[in-house]
Image (tube, rainbow, N blue to C red; front, side):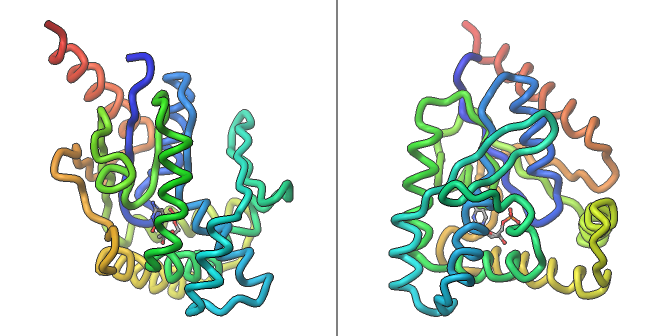
Amino acid sequence: MMSAIITIDGPVGSGKSTIGRLLAKKLGYVYLDTGAMYRVIALESRERGIAAGDEQALAALSGTIDIQFKQTEDRQLVFSSGRDVTDAIRTPDISMLASRISALGSVRSALVGLQRQIGCHGGIVIDGRDAGTVIFPHARFKFYLDATVEIRAQRRYKEFIEKKINIDYNSLFLDIQKRDHDDSTRSIAPLKPAPDAAIIDTTEMTLEDVLEAIVTHIALNEQASLP
Ligand code: DC
């Protein structure tokens, strides 16, 4: 399997990005975090004073945005026009704004275009909400990670605490619930498993368990397709 496209979709805190990054590293693939792209649009629009409802200005921004990723040993850095925005795009405010902006069709089509360009040669693990349903419906392997909202909120809370960022657990919990609800009920490219995705409930699994389940699934299905 030299150059497959592997998609990982799922709600907030289901483990997509950590698993995506680890899986890509293991396979020697590129890792693409599509959520980070919506977050960069959210951050840039806020800084430029563009209203969340101004679809025309947001579409223009999405069509001209310069987003770069840089993989380091243990994380992926995100740059907007050369500026490191890795931490700035992870605040609760930007999470909510990214979700709101991501419902706009013209923003989505600009970013999906970029995502297809980045992934078209394969050898990529791509995570998001619509990676297996819209961006690459013909991906070789598709996964959908899920977990109870309680465990996902606890995971996110732990991440903030580890980064020494003070955050109220209850508002984090409510934000996650709202974001999942909005992302799953929007009319364009809502969050849902692709019909051919392998669904993994990670509620009672460690990261290592999930990674192993994915690697095993890939190995088994690769063999199954040999003559
Ligand atoms: O994966 P994330 O939490 O960083 O994504 C932030 C928001 O961006 C998410 O709430 C919805 C939106 N998003 C999307 O609509 N489609 C994607 N493929 C990825 C993210």
